[in-house]
Length: 388
Image (tube, rainbow, N blue to C red):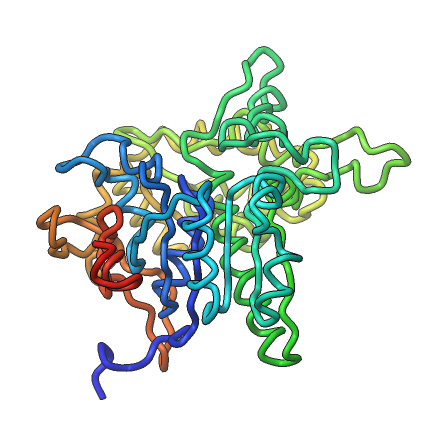
């Protein structure tokens, strides 16, 4: 049996997807890559991300294509009884319903988890929310920048430099982390149902998800305080923790263990540092990490990037050049692993996409089973020929 014909790990699982933008759609794309049958339910106007440019055709923007492969699209107006009735028919043989519609709005439509589970006891319901529903922010709308702000992520530059201004990470980190978290939460709920027969409701709040992620290291000294107040992991916040400038570009060199630091200084001819307490004792090093990184930054200027890469490989010390996004298609490792794929989309023509990064030996993920759908493309297929 060839790899293309092997069953994917979630074959036979049907997911009804009432999410939009990136948070929920990225989660369901990941599950679609693993074989789930994802039916994307869209308002007749379509997912807002369809309209974000650039695009070749109306309602098929690049951002939409990037988070909606391996799905089928139907259009339903859930404000009408007919639309809700059609949704309930879809749910009759579904395993999961995920929604980014605010829970209060779902309740007004009698599509809340309790109502749905009375009709469909085996249905796992998932709420991709901005904020946990047991707190005062429950009803607030949330997008990526909002959550980056309130979680403390946008303030991190001010911990490094008190004169800096807050700033967003230049990627939709809250949305994408929420998507990854939602995907694993759904798989955990499916596993629980498989093991016990019990379906359940799952809530994935973007705010709490990003905050927990951020505080894994940045809880820092607050961990031990009576009233938590001293946040911020020093190694992440010292001014010289940044790519190193070389004689002709930029590089990241990252000795980490005591042995690696000793090899680094011997490799650059600084044997006097090889037995220094900053090198031989991690506790001392962590207390002086800013000055230590400053020393390395000065040394980095003495060689070109290629010279550093060769020297660090010889010394078995982690080092990589700083890439631009436009460099990635030419990266030899990504090329060897087939990471970038050019596929033929039925309406958009040839487009670039990326393969799922995870590898299963028996149940491979798939990136090209179904292209990102046109709005309502599968109405006839799912509802019948009169609904095309």
